[in-house]
Amino acid sequence: MEPHDIRVDSILTPTRWHLCPRALEMIFLANSYLAGGLGLVVGALLAFVFLRWRERTLQQARDLERQSLLDAARREADGVLREGRLRASEERTISGRKPSARSPDV
Image (cartoon, helix red, strand yellow):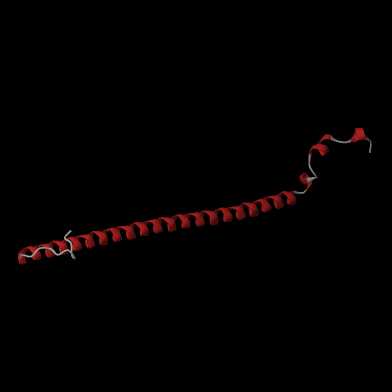
């Protein structure tokens, strides 16, 4: 075959795919499997991110609840302590004795 006998359309088409439609079908199937696999990976990643976000949010809510419970217990203990000191002070006042140096009045 002489160099001047080469047809232009045979130069522009890659490896005779125009002759084999089965090759195009194979490429489409390979791309669909690739797209399916990529979709699976992306879906799994999104599910992991969502579950991680939900767990962090629930943990933050538990921490806030725990902190509010501790604050309420401290306020209640402070109130009980003040009431006890007030009653002790009233009892000393009623009995007419002065507070001793060993138990200071606060």
